[in-house]
Amino acid sequence: MLKKKVLIIFAGGFVGLLAVILVQQGNPSNMGICIACFLRDISGALGLHRAAPVQYMRPEILGLVLGAFGSSLVTREFRAIGGSNALTRFMLAIISMVGMLVFLGCPLRLLLRLAGGDFNAFLGLAGLVTGTAAGAWFLNRGFTLGRAMPQKKINGYLFPVIIFILLLLLFFTPSLLFSSQAGPGSLHAPLLISLGAGLFIGILAQRSHLCMAGGIRDLILSRDIHLLSGFISLLVIALIGNLLTGSFNPGFTNQPLAHSDGVWNFLGMMLGGWGFVLLGGCPLRQLVAASDGNTDCAVTVLGLLVGAALAHNFGLAASPKGVPLAGKVSVIIGLVIIFTIAFFNSKFLTTKLSAQGVSSNVQGN
Amino acid sequence: MYREIDARGLSCPEPVLMTSRELNKTSSGTVYVRVSNVAAGENITRLAKSKGWQVEVKCEGEDILLTLRK
Image (cartoon, rainbow over all chains, first blue to last red; front, side, top):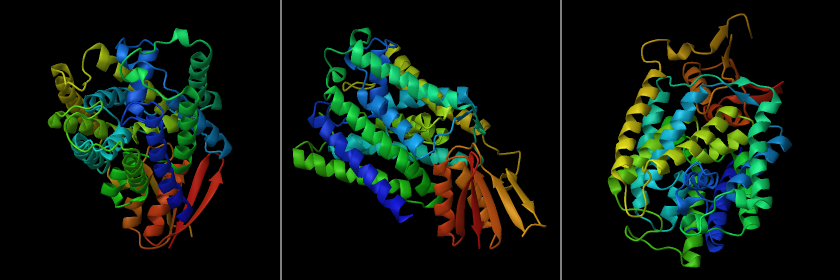
């Protein structure tokens, strides 16, 4: 148990350190690593959206998946499973992505923004906690997307193989991929450094089960601070790193790749947080679980890619200038949809919660 | 008397919540919990130990079987 505790604190801290290094190496400010932003850039690299400033096949994501996949094979944790409401997960992922792109970051970047002195992220944090609490409330009332079933191993290998093919494309035929000439997508660390950092993060996240949404969720549900300790060590190490490298600029205004519209920072991340709790984990955790053979989580990642494409194709995503009206409307619609999905997948009127999946035997020992 | 919880294939934190509900109404005895991933097994182990239960973990094919005793 102590070993696990040390591992999660180390993993969180190491990811925080790598994030600071990646910014020094060329990644956008306060975005050493951001699963939502980087999946958005990959969505652009594949041409799913044509927002020219945010297109790049981010090697961090590719490395993360391959590192987590390799680690799950070595530790024998790889299990091909799936079949738990994939379409609902796909929808939840799209909705969560819209929320994250209104806030401008996933929970991991939220921490990196805080560590960089971006006070707007405090409103995002408040939104994340509120959304997590909403999700936890439904979980306590029996919310479930149902059981995943074991599948043949080949099905679990598909996702890491697709990612490996994307890596081959990036290495050997980069001209096939869209790549930003200006804007955040054009800012990146050298390929091998990004890939190496991703591999390390993937291995550590797989070994420690690091999850940025799970920390707050477990604190609310069971006063368990295990996952939260990784979340906090990431924040502390990134903060120290930013202070040492002169990248800490406290304030609300002129923050890198952020806007100061507090209401929408709050609501965007509330939507994201609510979605992740219903999905069972943050975007980082979804990527790692998809690499471990969970095909439902792989569908969730596809939903995040499509969500990013929709957000940019239909002008929903925020920019440092602010949140467009269509983005605000879609966050409200997203909250309504997510409430509906949560409500009808919970058990308010039917089965007694305590009876689900529990059997007892009085003749036993 | 023993109780058995089948939490296979469920997303986090459902296996922990199912176990927690069961442990809250059981003061002693044996509770078997079957899960299908290591993360769920670790979370349940942490929960059970915090409530004073002894935990034994073993793999059974693709499943992980946790035996909680108090």
